[in-house]
Image 1 (cartoon, rainbow over the protein chains, first blue to last red):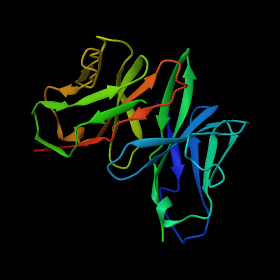
Image 2 (cartoon, one colour):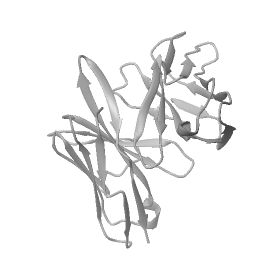
Image 3 (cartoon, each protein chain N blue to C red):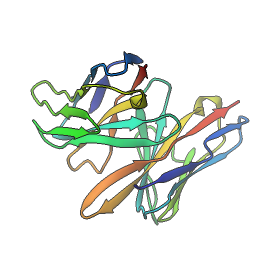
Image 4 (spheres, rainbow over the protein chains, first blue to last red):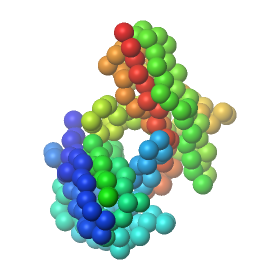
Length: 117
Length: 113
C-alpha cells in the first residue's frame, strides 16, 4: 500500500525558534498534500492544502506567514512553524493524495508532535 | 457548516464482544462518509467508505451504513479482537469539496482478553 512518512515524529523547541516538519510520499507521486492539526481529544483540523509547484491554500484563520508550506517536489511537502510559541504545541499530521485509475485516495502520515517550551 | 460528531471514548470491550461506535454528521450538501483507523504509532488508514444514501461500507469485519434519514454512519463489528485496539475517526467529504475531509474527534477502542 501507499506509504507517507513524516519527520521528525517528535520535536521539542524553545519559544521563538522555527521548526520544519517534512512529509514524504514514499512510493507514489503526490501533486496535492494536506496539513492537519490535532489538539488533544479534538478533531483533525485542516490547516492548508499544499500543491506542488504553486502556493499553498490556507484555511480560514490559519496564518500563512506563521505556518510556511513548501511543496518542493512531487514527493515532499514541508511545514515550517515560524517563531513558535507554546500555543503552537500540537500534533501535526499530513496526508498525500494519490490518483490511480481515476480514483483519488488520501494517505496519512503518522504525525509529528510539537512541544514548544 | 459541516461537522461530524462521534461518541466519546475510550470504549473498552472484551474480545469477541459486539462493537458500535456512533457517528452523526451535518453537511450543507451530499457528503461521502468514511471511517479511518489509527493504530498506535501509525498514520490514519482508510477503513471503509460509503458515497451515497443506503450504501454499506465494509472491510475487515467492520461495517457502516450511510443513513441519510438519521444523518448517521455508525461503525459496527460483530466480534472484536485485541488487534482492533486503535483510534477510529469518522469523516466526511462533500461532493466537489476538493478532497477536504471533515473529521470527528476520534474514538479510542481498547479490546481486552
